[in-house]
Image (cartoon, one colour):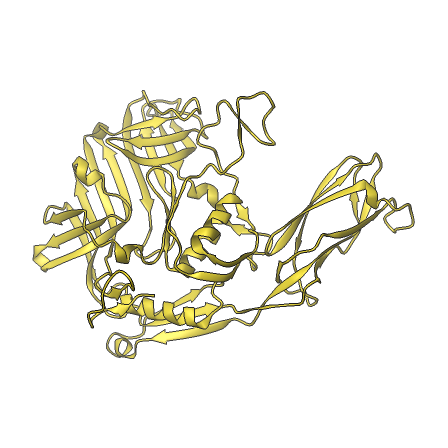
Amino acid sequence: MIAVYVDVNDDGTFTEMLSDVVRAAWRIGMVNPLDALAAVGEARITVRTLSPPPVGIRLRIIGDEIYFTGVIYQTEPQPLTGESIIIARDVLAELAQNRVRIPPQINARADDILHQIVKQCRLRYPALNGWMVIGYGQVGIDKLLDDTPLTTVFDVGKSVFAYVGDSWGDGISADEAAQAIAESERGRVFINRAGEMVFLNRHHTLTSTSSTATFADNMAGLRFTYGADVINRVRIRLTPRSVGEPNTILWTINNPQRIPAAGVRRVVGWYRDSSGNAIGGMDFVLPQFSANTKRDGSGMDATAQLEVIMDAGFSAATFHIRNTGDEDVYLRSLTVRGTPLIADNPLTLEQSDPSSITFYGLHEMTLILPALTDSDDAEQIGRYELGRRAVPRGMIRELFLRYPDAATLSLTLFDRITVTETKTAHTADYFICGEQHTLEQGGLRHDVRWLLEPADDDRFVVIGFSQPDGSRVLAY
């Protein structure tokens, strides 16, 4: 029996909710096939009580295994019915609230960059009871939390990106950053049932060739499409970079800033060239600064009263400035020097399939991939996308199941299945890329909707894994 569990004591122990669950619906995974980043996973649970668990508590839906993990974001008591609606979301909702800047990522792979993104995020820990969060708790509590609270399961990326993060300015949202990296890799990022962040490189589905289950005319329903995903022209925008001279001024303060006695200021400086254009920075030297007791500099030199700590990212630097004295002082100069990384004029490369355009009309896709700097990579991506989308084909987009058994319920995101439908004479393998569940009638009725995308290993050859046969395209 599937039930809802909550970690009421915030100690990592989940207990079943005693209130009767009237209805539960939840979803995880992608919104559309071939999406690079999943949507925020969400559960909406109706219970017979006007006193639901508090906001901020972790929640799980569990049967024979875990089906959903999230945090309660909102509750909606319904006084007229005596019920409450609980809304929980997975960790992607938290990632969207975090703005990140990362250290210089030079010749880095997608998994390493994603680790850096997660490391910059302030996320809720799985259990807080009995722990102290550094900077927020009090000494004497049992344990210290000083590492990331999010478990990650990452494939090793296939692409090596020359520069990543230099165009992020004061920061971009962590989910936007993750999507940019996944799109540049042509990989996938999602949150699984256990609440772990997963990254699959672009070869993952091409090398997962074993089907885990077969469905042959035993579905409650399906949605079949033909030609819905045709793409026959791919435009890819990339941004070449050039490296400037060492010891160049990347940022400097323009106006004196008051630092109060015994006070601390946090200042963020975006790197700019002499024309005010955003640039990246690397190979930094120690910041240069000066202070005075008067704003106009006519007072006493007070530089020795300041402690300046610089945290230099790829696109901006954060300064923690402390006045150790007992009088206000004015920070009159603060300069960051290093080697600039200059974004050159963007390039757009185009790949097309003339035959497909002739027979099916123009269907264009534009990819803006700032992590790409090399035209060869862009050309390969264009060919890869045309290889899987230029020719229309019939496919099952959604599969509907009712009263699934335990084996069916064990299937989850990016498990491979075989589907046979005799009326359309269709048999093909698919990957589950989105799942949605609905429990009603006290859990007696369970409906499942899977979003599917076709398995493409019959279209591509992966060097070192499969052999050329004359009919498949070399995978990027």
